[in-house]
Every structure is written in C-alpha cells, then in structure tokens.
Length: 298
Image (tube, helix red, strand yellow):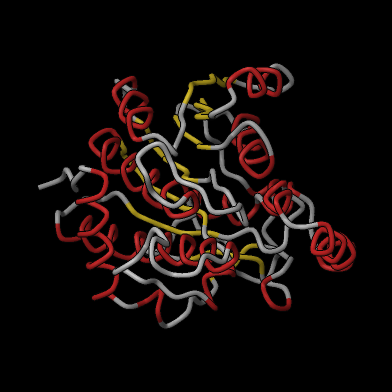
C-alpha cells in the first residue's frame, strides 16, 4: 500500500485491492460507516459491521457487494464493548472507530458517562485496547473540525459540575479522539509494534449527525449544507485514505478544500491542544481508570 499525496486528486478508484483483509467498522449501518463499508467490500475486504441497530444494518448489508457480516456493539455500554471484543477470535487488519453521536441533549451512557464523551471516546478507547492484540495493521479514529474550538476538562469530563452545552460536549469528545490517537501511537512505537494509529475527518458531509439540532439550527445547517457540504461518499474518502495509505503514525487526514469542508483527502493540521503530549497522556490514564481497560502490548 502506498500513499498518494501527489498532484492527482485521490478518489475511491485509487483504493488498493483489499482481498484477504479484515476490517471492523463501528457505526457501519448508515452514513459514513456504510459508505466506507461499501468501498472496502467492493475492493475485496471482509468487513465486520459493528452496530447498535442490527436489523437496520442487516437490511443495509443485504444490498452491499462483497463479504460483510453484522455484529452487535453498543459503544455506550462497556459490557457490550467487552462482549463484542471477546467474540473477535481472529486477526483484524484494521479497526475503524467511526460511530458517534453529536449535539445530543445531556444524557448518560449505561456506565454513567456523558453521552458524547462516553460513546465517541471512552467506548472506542475500550474497544481499541481490547482488540489491539488481534490488530495487525492500523487503528483509524474519526475526529472532526469541531475539535479546533474545543477544550478538555479532565476534572469534569462528564459534565457533572459545568453548565452543559451539547456543541461543547461534542467538541470535547472529538478533541479526545485526536489526543487518544496521539498517545496510542506513542505507546505503539514504544512497544515496538508496527501497528499505526491515524485519525481522519470527513469535512462537512451530509450525515445524520445533525438530527438532534433544534429546528432553527437544522434550517441553517440545511441552507449552508447545500452550499458547502459534500456527499457521504466523498466524506468517506479521508477515512478510506487513512485506512489504506502508507502514512506516518498519528497522521490526520481530511479534505483539501477551503476550511477542510470538502475536497479530496490530504494530511491536515490539528489544533495545538490536540498535539499536547502531556494532555494526551493524562487523558489516557483517566480513560483507563474509567473503562477498566489498559494498553495490552508490552
């Protein structure tokens, strides 16, 4: 597998053959996860669709080409995460941490975590640690431009003392995704592992993540979306690029257009906070305590 950061825009036609490879994708039943599944399956990969809504995902999978299977995974329930991980008894080339929630009202996961932080970060943190012994190639975690204006309060990550704001909670979880990727790569390198950790974001893609916005913001999003948003198929390209190209560890991929809203995949910058190794290490330690999972590679 080789990188394509030259002058020619990278498209799904540039996806290298995936025959013989196994990929797990969380949230694969719809949106970006489904488009990523479709492209990898067409290229020959065996894709495990890890989803909360199994019947819906099976309906979607029935119309997909290639080899796919649907398994239940609820990232908002650590018992479900553990059960899913225990069911994976074979090597996995790539784990794509794609599932997520955005702009939801204040709520708690089954384990008592704020919904964004618990689902988008802690669920994937636990899943990755539990699956790492089987992963042979890479972990790709989906972040967002929302991380750029976000902060991370490690003294109150679950919004128990702060006034709750859904956009800020979502941004915090996406910042956590990037810090997780940074520290995961540091630990993989220290352990002498060849597995790589990458992050990617889709830009402004037409997914279902904005369904929890209020009516006014939904109208604004729809109006602006007609001007700047790209399709789910195009939004999946940075994910596919991060999952298949030869990139340095901890690389971050997004669209190459203005404001990283749309365009073809390329390496993109992250905020200074998202590059803070001390904060990344502190978040990792907290996440281990909250999930009861640890980095498994010596």
